[in-house]
Length: 539
Image (cartoon, rainbow, N blue to C red; front, side):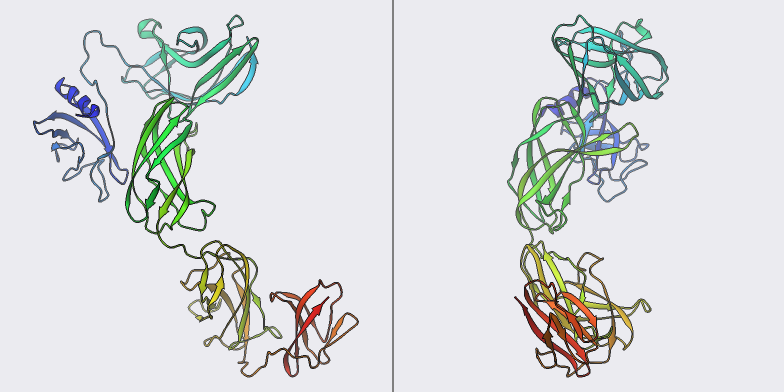
């Protein structure tokens, strides 16, 4: 029999009821009582619901047929996770003593050098009486100085106090001193109290919440006193088994941690994401579970997790673990507790397109675009796998929210991990009306919007159909003299670089080329005979 269950059996055989707790898979908790065991190893459970569902259960199931007030409300009804119990519950015996306790949310963080005899300021946050009795606690509070053997060698009196059950103080600023005659060495300063019931003779240490600052470490070297704060766990990961997780399956994962910090009992979780691409591919956050990690120890924790099927295959996932702290205002923080890398065998990586510049209306003339010859210039990045597919251009109207028209382009190619690919998207719309303005946005072939919103939107006013208009490169009617392009009779001239980005636009028939960088350009002229395009080479 395992040591854990042997402890349960010992309690029941001694005639002591065992307060027992657990949570469901959905983290719904309940506390109940084990008060017997039969010859088959089933424990008798009093669920605390007026006799409802009381009976014999295996520790590994604890799944009542029906539940009362305080029970689970989800479809997961077995309280078989994060189990714990309280031992030693019994009626008062001869010589029994009251268990007094003061709980502290936190103490202030100290990290500085002082001299012997200096007054060192420390703040106590949210201290209250949470003893196992309704009696009022009359106590004296101290900062006690302990040597390396755990002996008190100095006391700093703080105050007398009278604390009814669950009462205390929100914030108390205190001071302590390090004696001037203290020898060199390592010491600790802890928050303690004594109580009136035994004439203030027994020293009790105040309890501090999990993950909070515990006490102060004191290092004396000559006249120098180095004061630091013992706070929380300090974990490194020694090993992870297995070294690859399977997406879509429940994985049993053993993780060995080395703790060079303080004790920790509380919630624990992990976060899984592709290294460097947290915002690109799907991620996974595990549910929180209760763990116990002793100070200065090496422990192996077991995780049974269903890994989502949508996680992609990659050999460089980050496995980041977290523990949780509560500050003096009651807010819970998630604190990094160590990380490593792991592989995941999952879905094929998708492309991850991102627009880096505004959409360009390449064949806009006099503020309109021909509805059957739409040409858009787009700069795309791709943080994922290669994209080899069409895209969808959708048109919507602010005047009619129910309106939508779209066209699908030819296949475009944006290589994997591309930092910039310029593409021209061509197509036609059939439902738009001449003279009306519509918003155009671009979607992937899987109908996913391409971010960001401030780039992926352009307003276009549509003209009559432009069938038969020639866009071939010609030279007739375009002249270059004195750093100026001239096109007699032109209404508008536009200059584009080789990538299709608009460099300059002028009304009329003259466009300056002065101070243009070396390279290849295209000039488009909109005149009486329609558009004409000429290739310009600047040397």
